[in-house]
Length: 396
Ligand SMILES: Cc1cc2nc3c(=O)[nH]c(=O)nc-3n(C[C@H](O)[C@H](O)[C@H](O)COP(=O)(O)OP(=O)(O)OC[C@H]3O[C@@H](n4cnc5c(N)ncnc54)[C@H](O)[C@@H]3O)c2cc1C
Image (tube, rainbow, N blue to C red):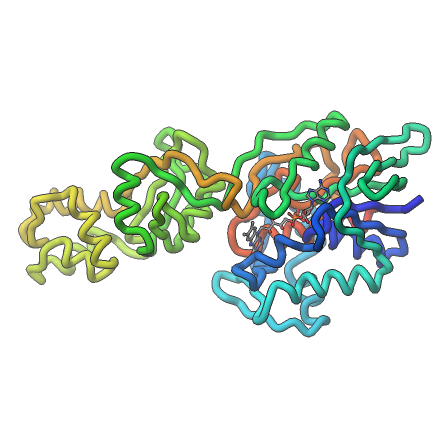
């Protein structure tokens, strides 16, 4: 009988496995796909944004926000960076504490593979799990797989969320949780572009490819929901994307709105006042700060356009207010097909925060994205995968 079987050879599963292996446990990893770490390979545009220097509990969404604290405190970004450096992997900070490989995400997958091999972990790819049974007499687990039966003392479910089904994402973790009577919270796509309909869609389409800075926040029933992000937004042929929109999408649910402040680091009214005497028409003036086509489209609703100095103080107040509160109503999101993460999942109240073990089922652990802990864009999701995997690996 194997000591530990990990299902899913992604970020969290490989980390759990290598830590358990280093502690002398016999470890088997079962992966459905033909190769390991598929999501790591495509992440960060092929360069894997593997952690964030500033990752802390405040960078995560969860219906139980304290849950992630323990694992994140015990395995920090610097712990993962130490492993990366030990393997001689070159990396750099892109912005906002986001660390990327200089060369390729493959470096991270190969590092995890080597760590697993050194720790004696066996990895079996191309394996479907058909059934999982708990043997009540000795607390072990019996797995029926496409490559024969497996018996194991402890079972770690690390099969991730629903994003990118074309890469083989499955609802396996949620199904197993339900089979064992654990609550699963509603799931939705996160870090995902917004879609629009009607006139808003025409507006976005016409500007597709254009990006600009903003600070963005979700507005629900007139009140802000979730954090505000100062980043770029991007028009697409389906709606809005770019880092600012991906960030707020994780907090969004229909029929909430998204509010963009187009003057994230300044006061629109003061800027208009400063430039008022130039005599330029408002669209020309705004094109000093924004791409011309965006300035044209944004000011079209203010027709007839005038020189900035010809607006009354009250009218300029109103324009400034609109620039700082451009409010849009997405029709939806692009969904799991393009989402980077799944928000929601296994209710953390069912798990022990130190070990990620199910309260009701000793020996059964859930790690990574399958759990209701979702990071912001910028390396936070991998940090959760490493930290939760590490906490579990130390306990199994
Ligand atoms: C395009 C994209 C880019 C991203 N970029 C970043 C980034 O740069 N930085 C960052 O922090 N986060 C990024 N993320 C998010 C990050 O990839 C995930 O949060 C992270 O991979 C979750 O790790 P995990 O181990 O829980 O799940 P996964 O990495 O998804 O691993 C789950 C594994 O389980 C396997 N599996 C699934 N079902 C079964 C089954 N039934 N039986 C056996 N095996 C199964 C899967 O094949 C997979 O190998 C990105 C996501 C996407 C989609």
